[in-house]
Image (cartoon, rainbow, N blue to C red; front, side, top):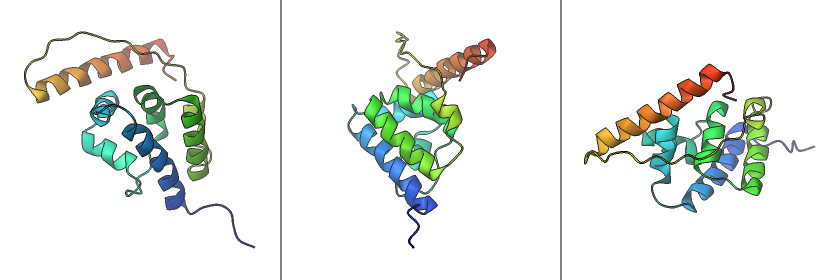
Amino acid sequence: MVDPTPEPEEAIRAYKTILSQVIDQRPSGMRQRLADALGKHRSFVTQISSPAYSIPIPSKHLPAIFSVCHFSQPERDQFLAAYHQAHPGKISAAAGARKTRHVSLIVPDFGDDRQNAALDRAINEFIQKVTSITGKNG
């Protein structure tokens, strides 16, 4: 009898394919916005969103990914099903994560990509720290 459970790398590739398709359907700059929201370099987003890399996506990043990439409910359901198949038992934090909302800020443009990215990271880190203080950070 053939085991219907895919190999771990194949299962990881399945959910990364979904993420990659979602990102590709969004406006340009999505990978950088995601990197900023996660407090990571863009190369990290490339590694976690490319099916060519077998590096799994940490479950703690899923709520931010869903929010920043504006996953529709069907996209989210499909992604979570594939993620659960790749990582049984690691989905609980992501599945029970609190809802998020989008807030826009108008900030100065420093005329320097590195300074602008540093400001974006600082704002995101501040928000993460404040929400962790409330004890309601997912």
